Length: 258
Length: 225
Image 1 (cartoon, rainbow over the protein chains, first blue to last red):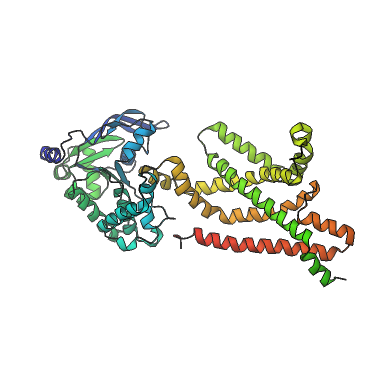
Image 2 (image 1 turned 180 degrees about the vertical axis):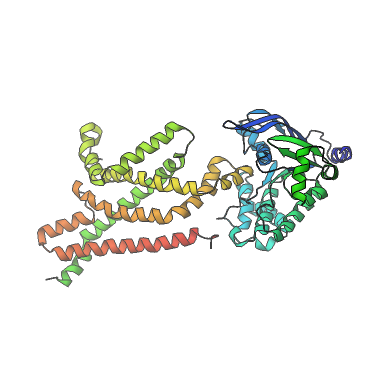
């Protein structure tokens, strides 16, 4: 883990962590979904969060760009503390891309428009420039030829790659992935994972909720195991997978790997 | 018996044509205003603030419950009794009909649009919000076009229904299609020919609207085919 942090440190002179979550508690009504979460993500790190359903992993990642509001503790993204202030939320979201389980592409817009709409409305870029940027990233995810199609005309794997391109068009320094392959047919998982692996190779800071253990093994700097709203255990993937410390982690991994 | 040449004469007569224009004009004005305000009402119908939700519910309850004829008469005869303002020259039958029918139409459209907005998944708003888009941008660019696609058939239904409801404005002597037909009948006693001519006008207008609906649905359904 130390070597990881060092490489991250040398590649970016700014030593501020990308995301700092400290003492975060969150309730849905009377039910506590997050319990005292502390998690630091350094620049260039790739964190994989796993855990059983209902463990709070999706809620945690959604708190990182304020799609969910936490009640206690602090979340600092690139030095900006997330509060109800719209300005802060805007600045964080302009630097954090997100990919969802169900893609959340806009069905009434073409693939190209999906990639340009936020550039036009948020960044206020002229159409030509936004289109050029969009095409660059559509090429990056290997589907420039689908630019004029609508999301409904694409396979699940293609849609998710468009969703990744759409997020990248905003030039984020951090990418959040919320179970990006869970809604895909098995034969389409690979094309999405390959895209994510190539992002990781470029040094993108990534936080990824996923059960794809091979992906975690290959790219994660650290794997975080959550259960019952708490972080139970975190470690380098090779260590966590081969020698989990906690009973709950062992049980979860046991189920996942068999 | 039915005199075909009189029927043709009626169809091409200036009063009936003007009456039809008034019917169309009134319907378009009411629909336009009701769409905007109904959309506003429909989008705050699921507001987190209970007072707002309660007000919307109250409004819809009142103007969906009241018969159009009653609201028309209330506005035309009742409002001047309430205030001097409504006794001035600007308060014509057209203005009164516009006001009364809009009040009702807003309530109906608010209901249709509320459910249409609810049908656009929460994920759409989240996807746009994660890209940094603001609430009104998300509403205009993402939510509204999708909600309209869902609502168009119901909205067209309401528009056609409204077009025919304008005929009730004959009771406040607005010179729309039915009123001018009645006038013509009062002097000629040719019921079949004039009612027939009025019917042709309504059917032609509704047919054009139905064609327009197909075009609009086709346009909004791009991406869903």
